[in-house]
Image (cartoon, rainbow, N blue to C red):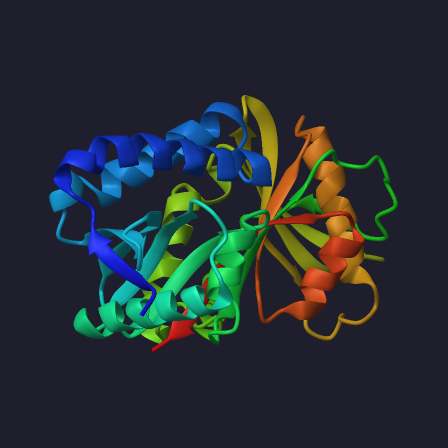
Length: 312
């Protein structure tokens, strides 16, 4: 055994916190996931929510990576909840050998067994090559991908007409959207079907507490020659103090697929985002939906981070 995982001493916590916060901010900013002060606030939330009692927080483990010469080679930070183990950060002071990374992974699996964990997950930023080396080859699947289009191209070529969703159309949309998201969450491997249904309902209530009258939410139906072909749901948020559009739902109606309407709806999203003053569009796409991933990349969206999951 050439590496060990040892608990972080309490007297080292403040230094570790400062350096890890700087790293988390840099990962968010350099990936493009969160710019400027947004990255600072998000990193700070990690410490507030996951380490409320500092190094003594029972639902987190901060461990030093130590080699056989007693030299510290980095740290890993895990959080635990509901039988799941989350890799919050893996920081390597210098590249490790493949053998050392394999040994480190076996130690991680040992911790998962101790904690009776059934799933390990990790958010992997696009530029974090060493974390990718650490996780690659161990059977993780990509649950979801965060993507960004910035700037929004000026290509008003949508082949569909979009109009604000009516009060009459909203109830059937709401039921289908909530159920569809729950189904996809479960299919992504992140949650059980019951957990996915509860999470989908929670997010729907959070985003649309007042339905169509919720400020900052724009819901549309798309049509061609008067026939509905899909729906589009945009949230207008802020990103680095600039308006930012986020695609919460986009769906081509059954019976209207494979006619190019998916691409046309994405073009419509660009147009409506620009009309709202946004200069960027973000979205999450589930990893199993390779067709959607391919389309978004063809349209110029770039990957920022991936959520990986592994059942153990």
